[in-house]
Image 1: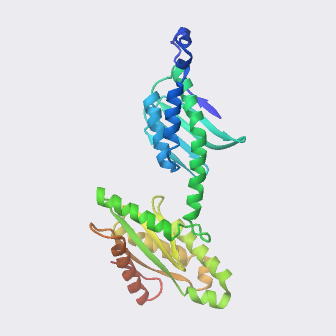
Image 2 (image 1 turned 30 degrees about the vertical axis):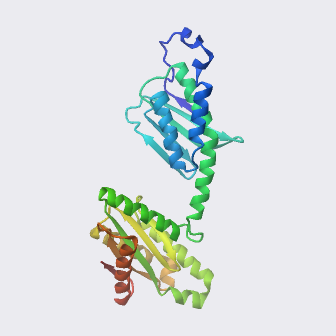
Length: 296
């Protein structure tokens, strides 16, 4: 697939393109340097940053977007871009990613050749990074509910606290425990219990904003991290979770609800400080009865 709005500069003379062979694209030494840079990391986001830096240096690109089956990465600002070029990355006749290149100006033939070469050089590093990314994402997911697992929770929380220390950005934490879950496993078996956990996870997903994170912390306990949240937002989301669970057929059938404790990140908090406050609020909610919410 290729779409382009005037990629070439129409006023450029043909004689410009017949000087030296290397002027039609990258030199051998430039190619080797670029390949070395792009082979330096398997981290998808780091690789994308390296590639975008090269696009800016070589072609003064405004932005690049990498679209792949499980998401996308956009670097730069395409707001003022007049020229867009879309090129697929293909391996064994299968498209594994689509690159969207944005430029403010039309490209000369030489610049178009450089873009095609950079795109080609990016193919194998990108494919390897995407495979690594997919494996990492699988390792960070709970196999039953498809929510983030405890390792994913820990990584996300560490990153959000680090960002909070640098920028002062606030975020909330919800700790959620299912009421009466044990009786489902005891009376109906673990298969039915699994269906209850899956339904609970779906209620969580539907309750959260696009920027929020949900995790299965362990057993029948879940956690949510809410960027930019405060006490009011925490309460709104907690009540939304409880309402959706109350409306769920399989949860209602077994008399399952949830208790929720919440807190917000405060300057100087450690990961344990934050969790302990929310967990203490959860304990207070459990003591108050079924389907209760408490904030700390």
